[in-house]
Image (cartoon, rainbow over all chains, first blue to last red; front, side):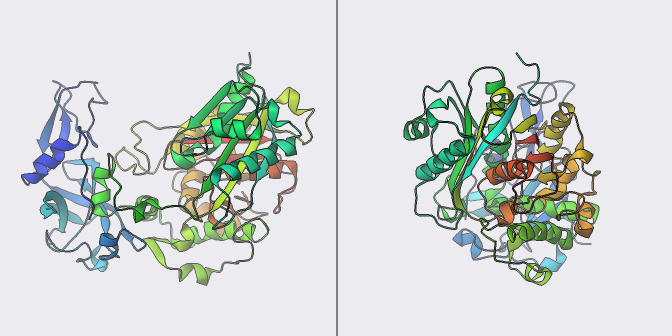
Length: 143
Length: 383
């Protein structure tokens, strides 16, 4: 499996993920405070270089999804077809995180019945360890 | 100095190699063959070339090309970023250079061995810098996966269906069936063959994806004044634009406010502002088609229809010869060759010369676009 290769701006996301926290970068300038993703050095709204990492509720909705089929990298081909979803965060709908909808945090990428994939479905985050790195996964909210 | 690029320059030569899944020649040799063919077409000696433009992904440098073809002193060279988004900007940069006197004979080219070359998702050793950290670990690996995500959302929001994507694939295949140089020349497509094709990244199937091709193309740009004395009927570069929208993020443009209004919208605003005519006056269009969903998205972006109407626009044979807007008349990236969209430029020139294998009667205006979903470019050509 591919592991995230964080850059300087993105590293805090993965450090918080290792603690089981979903945090998104926000402007720390007084009177601005806007969230931004992907992380970057400067606020596009007020150009402040001050930033903080705000804890999210971890809830969201499926904005879109695909189901990749081979040819794929071997580790992914072994689980294909799997789903990749984009989650729009309940706290900030314009921030959309790519991830996988699974039946349990450490379940395979193809563990969910594809018939249950639906745009608009409510989901929440969970973290799983993959080769020593904590990565977010997504679970369907019980309805 | 001209205050506008409008009709200040013209494409006077086009050249290409054969297209195939595998060609024995090197990318450098293919580049030289395409460029020399384009110069011969124009009736201009290679020693007169003093400007080059290609893509940043082009691995054949202008240094090597200039040396090999025997160019003279070169006073302008540029390379455009973002893969297929760069195609039309190569012509645009040369048009600007020639119109402002920085050079007199410009050559744009693309040579690529994609059919027989490596594919990134087969290489597990590749390191993943930003923005890959936000997508790759989750198995969003290939451009087809990245565009498939936008396609699914587009279908959800606007009621687009796989039949609409089929309309796009079919129009390109039908044109390729008329073009002996196209890879899919003798391979007709039916609705059944499309609907039963294997999936690549649902909702996209095999025929929603461009070809993997070896080949090269080139074109020659000179001033409008000089073009009048060239061997071929000039095809004027009427308007040029690049497009990189606010908060755009490249292929995985999921993080701005409206991912379904991509770079085409930005390029289009400038393109039409500089032009003497509008979308309804376009006789034929060559629209970048690495993936079928890029066509409805581009039809909306370039103003051929309203927001959300791109899929419905494809109905009733609108994209076929005789339809409302014939597209990709050589077969496009989907069915002629995928050489990062350069074949769309040369096909636009063929249409305005009246020599296309799927000629639109009396075509006098043509839109050519570069990759949508990445920072892009577009040109309007007129005869």
